[in-house]
Amino acid sequence: MAPYLAKHDVSAIEFCARLGISPNVFQNADGWLPRAQCFHMANELAALLGDPFAGAHVGRLTELRDLGQWGQSVLAAENVADACVLAAANVSSIHHGSDVRFVVEGGTARIIFRFADRFEFDPRHFIFGSLAVLRKVPLLAGEPSAIKVRLTASRSRGSEALEECLGPNIEMGCDHDMIEIDRELLNLPLKIRRNRPSKVTEALASTVEAAKLLSERLSDGHALGLEVVARSIGMSARTLQRRLKFCGVDFEDLLDETRRGEAIRLICEGVHSMTDIAFRVGYSDSAHFTRAFKRWTGVAPSRFRTDAQRAP
Image (tube, rainbow, N blue to C red; front, top):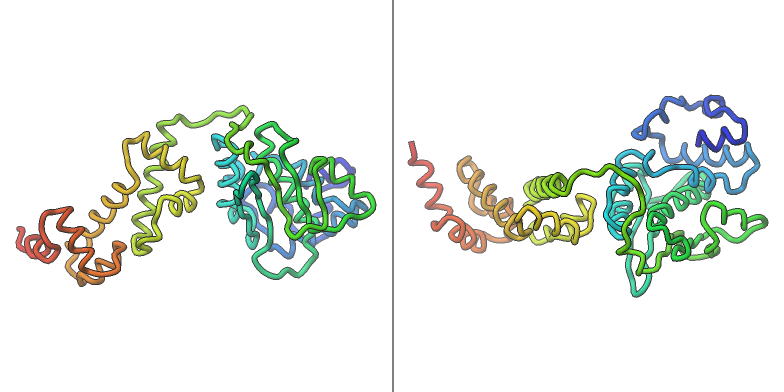
């Protein structure tokens, strides 16, 4: 916002004071404002400068690297597909109440932006700004002609000025606000200069993160598939699988080993029933758990508990 205000010779500090907002909240990417206040600020900005597309201009001036961990995760992606997945999965780190979906259908991929609940103020400028930022994600491939922008806003006088921020491929009066991408773009690498961690560091970090998530969510049972875990830690299933493989780890083996270790820990505590332990490690009934435990240890869980209690 500050660069846009500066272009119009308006002090960002004075603007915040006018709205009763401390500018300190914007000193780092982790600062937060209530969403209604963000909408109000965007609308006041547009009114002050007489710019019907102020939000889009602010979004255009916003660099991904300045958006904290969200931007850093997007810039660390290997290709457009991974960048889009990360942008959608991690949006809650910068927007509370925003709902961003990445959908691939046929020859087209879409980043769909919407709000999860009702809003007090007109969100138009916030939407313009968000789409201007989200467009930067596939734009990292360097193929702007393959990117289109769909807006729910109706075409109005002067709306051609949006092309400066959202590119020439704009359609208005649509059912959803979204960025539309030719599917061929998804596998292209990102054309940016960056200092990235080594493949070894990335692979190890992803493996540890996946193992931690599995341990925390074992009771989810069948829901703990590769795609669910990958999405939860902010990457595509293909990327997670590749990084696990780099460490010599198979996802199903990792899940199995996590269940085994947690089951043994719970049995040794001696305070849980076998039915409760079965549920805690992701099995819907004790029979399936018993068969798995015999495969892991060679003995039934009840025998394992007895032996553990007898051990000095």
